[in-house]
Length: 481
Ligand code: 4AD
Ligand code: MG
Image (cartoon, rainbow, N blue to C red):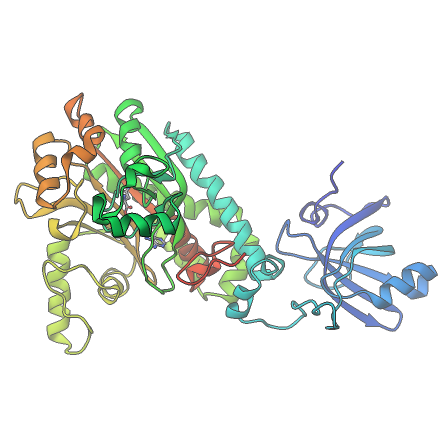
């Protein structure tokens, strides 16, 4: 049988039976007659305090183990659960037996480096270098539990609303976003590629028909196009999986490998899409407020002051809606009233910079903002054209601190318009033949969006750097672990 988790032991009423604790030592305080050992098993934020009373007589074996016990060791402790005389905890363990399952030597020797997570504050940068040990810290334990809970909440949200969970491929031949930031997948040896290149074969010198898939393939940047095919059959689907972008952006909100949630809905327009995005975000926030109180309290106290109040406010507020054109007007107004407010002048036709997103959310709205109807030039080919022939039915959800958290749109469901958009952008309609078939057979209005899961976690827990909300961050120059 699996051991009982500390999370449950902490909420039990003290009883006279013996209990067994398994976990890792966070701290040991040796005070003459009493030795306090704090043990954590990661099941919740709190440690359980195990108190060894020398006055009550410890056997020689336990005494010896206790003296050499260090932070980080894995242990089994036997004792009785008693009401705790100390404040801040209802119960503690009156411990009488201690078994070390795995040592964690503190001292560095010739053979082994001392356990790096001694009790003191460690910088997040340092912890990133020991990403295999950082889940044993308060912060990363809390992030991991929050992330796990939020994944569950995402599936629950969609399940309760009759969305089917769809697994889209990781290896694809198309570039969904047309941004060209893709990792190529190939089994061709660099020498073969170089040889062909010299020989002047197809496609810039290389004959990809000789490659594993018989064509050029990549890691997916989005499961959207494939999700659309299933939305055109099952009405409501969503994906939740890893996506890859070879963007050379070394920022606190970009990863090369991140998880994206992409709902896709048939018989839906942009307005339905906006309502879904807002409801979804609020639902996840509420579930964290209700079900992750212990961890959230930690983030509120130590990572981002006022976090909980802010989340409650967001969960109850109506998101502001503004068109891109009006947003640019607001930004221009602010820029002319305050010269030097922005590094980049806001200009119709240009993408919003993060300073602009910050202004719109933090100064103008004081909360999340949904910006719609962007110029077609700065958005992907699949978005539905507005009647003005200049803007598309796009929507970005922007939030304070982070900026864009969701990108989505109503999709172009008209075959001719979609084809002319593809050609206009220098893409070949025949490469998208199956995608276009969705418009040839039983086309229907449909819409969807993509939410960057790590950005949502950042938003909910207040962590500044996206590399600290994914267990093993992949970013430019970083693929250790
Ligand atoms: O705005 P994006 O590029 O939209 C799409 O990929 C659409 N195909 C989604 C859809 O309509 N189904 O990406 C969606 C979201 C962004 O808003 C952002 O939250 C996140 O994905 N994202 C990243 N997160 C971390 N690191 C990166 N490099 C990211 N790029 C995008
Ligand atoms: Mg986007």
